[in-house]
Amino acid sequence: FDAVDVIRAKRDRHELTDPQIDWVIDAYTRGAVADEQMSALAMAILLNGMTHRETARWTTAMIASGERLDFSSLRSSSGGPRPTADKHSTGGVGDKITLPLAPLVAVFGVAVPQLSGRGLGHTGGTLDKLESIPGWRASLTNAEMMAQLNDVGAVVCAAGAGLAPADKKLYALRDVTGTVEAIPLIASSIMSKKIAEGTGALVLDVKVGSGAFMKDEESARELAQTMVALGQDAGVHTVALLTDMGTPLGLTAGNAIEVEESLEVLAGGGPEDVVGLTVRLAEEMLEGAGVQGDPAAALRDGRAMDVWRHMIAAQGGDPDAPLPVAKESDTVYAPADGVLVGLDALSVGVAAWRLGAGRARKEDAVQAGAGVRLHAKPGAVVRAGEPLMTLLTDTPERFSRAREALEGAVTIAPEGSRPAQRLILDRI
Ligand code: URA
Image (cartoon, rainbow, N blue to C red; front, side, top):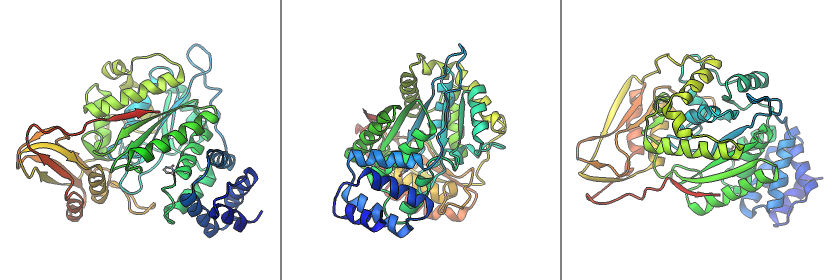
């Protein structure tokens, strides 16, 4: 094979053959296809698309570039095989759902192997949030992960380098060549990692709106359908929910402040949207795993909190240690009386990022205490001069750029107005 022939084929809108796809992924992983060739191919795919058959083969080839985990040795309390379930969110602002969800699902005897990532850009990363807990570590060996799944039932850790190495290389390339936003490439990237991870059931939370990758419902639906089909083909019980990311989830966007909010949910309280989505995703994961249970009750009665404490301690974290607090704060006030009908997710996400909750480059450190705390959500009646948000950082010179990001983020309408409030848009 020749890389230029493969690029020309996709450029001229031909369907790539299975051997072409297998070869190009393998050769790229080995370094025999150059970055500039793969970036030309990625751009041709972005512009001309891939058929379902091509996307499925692309995914299989990326899985084959690395190792596959095997959870079949996990045992349930009755001695039978233990079901596994995982959740993946396409990323949003204030999306801390993994934190209460993983221990909650484990309450019912389902093993939850939650391989997670770090934030880049305006969306936060689950590992960055958990690293604000003193002592907690994200990196586990495969053996440590298996042991924790057996003992605790839930693990949230960094994906090891062995899973889908082709994707790791390709994703970094797409990030710098304007080729992230291709549905076949996003779907195969996410699903190759989830299938290689070996989960039995998978629930996808595909975000729609300003704070999401997919800004409109139509493209989110297409991404969801593509991923569900890839999962089903691979024998993974896969379901997707389309959920709103026009406004942040919950009342916090940051790291330690999102852990704090997750603890409220695990203690039976917390914001209604975070609780509602956590419970709904847990129900979907249990159904996918073929297990009965009442997740809302397990939040209220402390069983999910017990698993959380074990899960954090198993990774070196102290569940009782005070969380880091930002050194400086600044308040944003409501500009008028009325009903808050809009609080833009992207603006809040960018503000939290600029305050230090996220990173500009992969190698940057994040601030544990930084972020945005919301005092009102869409639907609330507000009065001019009332606090709407608190901006948090250790480095006060960041306040002005965060405030710039928030210009136009708040929409207040006359009393009696109602915001569009649908959290779960569809199930696929
Ligand atoms: N997340 C991934 O893992 N891959 C993508 O391509 C986009 C989001």
